[in-house]
Length: 578
Image (cartoon, rainbow, N blue to C red; front, side, top):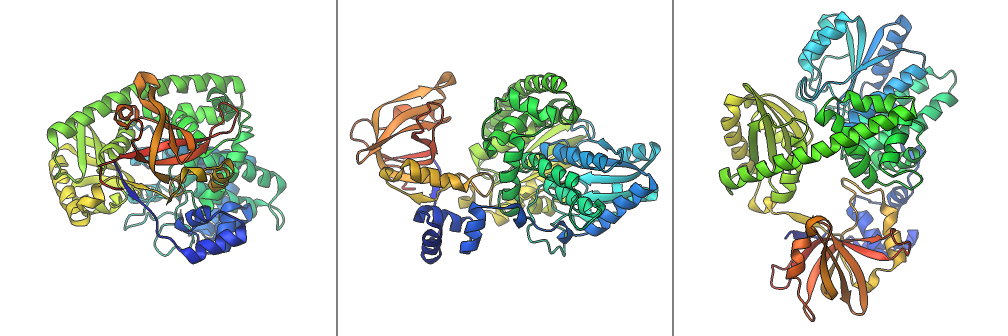
């Protein structure tokens, strides 16, 4: 059971937006709760345009980056794009590689293997690239903490342009350019771009510089518009806030993805049964994204790069099937690790552990981040999963809203060989011998910044409504708030004192899910509660009431377009009032 939290209501602004944009008061209030402060902000949120994108020249060091790349292009240097192995990094590499080739260059790329090199730039790879004659390294979705590695590249006579979106460390690398909206002193008005968003801005700036006139050359403009598909995939899969520019990238990118001409992407979409239909963020987050990510998690990210770069649909089909097989293997391994993690929590940890630090021999490095996310969801504790091998461990951290994981890791960085990431997700490297001290001191820090209430799971709800509010027109209006994602979730509504109409059923594999109809005041709707099958026997019978929190949706599988409620949480009578 979660605590239901409702946003404050700004009656004046809500009513003005509702009146001037012809919206329901509830939809207007949701816009306000998501940071909209003016009617024009609301209009832009509902109808974003490409003109709302920010000039790439406002990013720090962008002019230096373009100057450096163009100089190396004129000199005929060997250029290497150095990316990450997740969807964000892979899409960034694919896009920048494609643009430089379109501009007449012949760049190559390097993507580290999660199990061998791990995340980020590595000195061993820097030396290898020098031996191959590399003159310029362009990082995408990594590099902001690579002080030592960039220093080595400089010493060896290479230059480095960094494009990244991760939190900067106190010392920045001495690169030819560091393009990151989060670095100190940045005046860029939106700091939450994904790595692929920063890379797109670099491509945009290069397109403007390389165009012969004042306007972007037509072939470059087409490339930028087509690349929105890659930007959408990387942005959504990296779980950055879908606000401001990211919302524009997601909205227009999903449309571009539907007609994407890359044969590998077409093959992957076909395998996921997404051809000839409108796409939403869910399709990227839970269908396309996991298939691309699984290459780096279970084997080599090179498999996914081959898919994105192939010019053969037939080859794309073969690779997509290979990725599907790897994904099934990943799911089985993930369940094994999840079961082991639960046992450790029950047997080794206590309520005094505000942060769970779980370590085991040879947990697959590509899987532990997913498991950490599930642990956070189930137990609502910041969680770090560490895979031990020899004297060292490599870990993935996930957090709750009240704890900035990068700040927490910074407080105990004396125990770490390295770390980096975001407020809610990070990675670490640590010596095995330091693990116990790290766990102790990290928890000591957590006790200074977290309260017991911070560790109680919460469900952020948008409003309380009666069921007779839920017309198809009203639910359709809520759909205008899509695409949904981080910081822009699907609206969650609450209806109190509803009753079961008919009987509840457990459906799906092993009865994992709940299916029922609920009624209130003459209105009845079908409900589905994913993963909530066990509550079916606990719901009250005839005459009994309970409270539900849910996402209202328009079902599409019957073709009738009825309103359906996707249950998020249920509070029974007698439980603490949410």
